[in-house]
Image 1 (cartoon, rainbow, N blue to C red):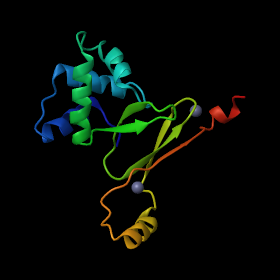
Image 2: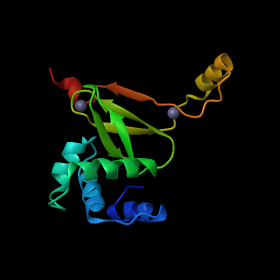
Image 3: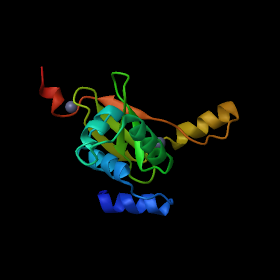
Image 4: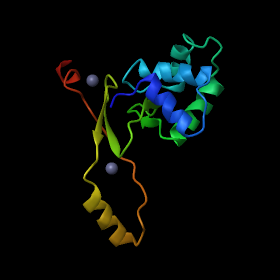
Length: 143
Ligand SMILES: [Zn+2]
Ligand SMILES: [Zn+2]
């Protein structure tokens, strides 16, 4: 299912949040590209829809949207931090180090490894963070 402004607004409403103009602007920015965007980039793109969109508002909006799993933070190879729209369910990202293209992979086959970790540590494993980086097919051809 591809996200549209309508499905995203619906998700916000389900969690009791209104689609305010700044939130709408942030969603427009995220919908405009499949690549992870930094908060500053979201602000710049979002200002096309909501001229007085402030950076603090962007941060607050992203925090809220992360809480209800509407967006996902992505760590980029250069140490920066971007955001992409999240699809529901358990997914991981494969990110191109060069052009920042992102592909989402559902599931991860980590079950056996997590069981092993649980056995070794006695922990009850409640979550994990896995990101994979590499060079996308296009970037492999760039010298
Ligand atoms: Zn690439
Ligand atoms: Zn996983």
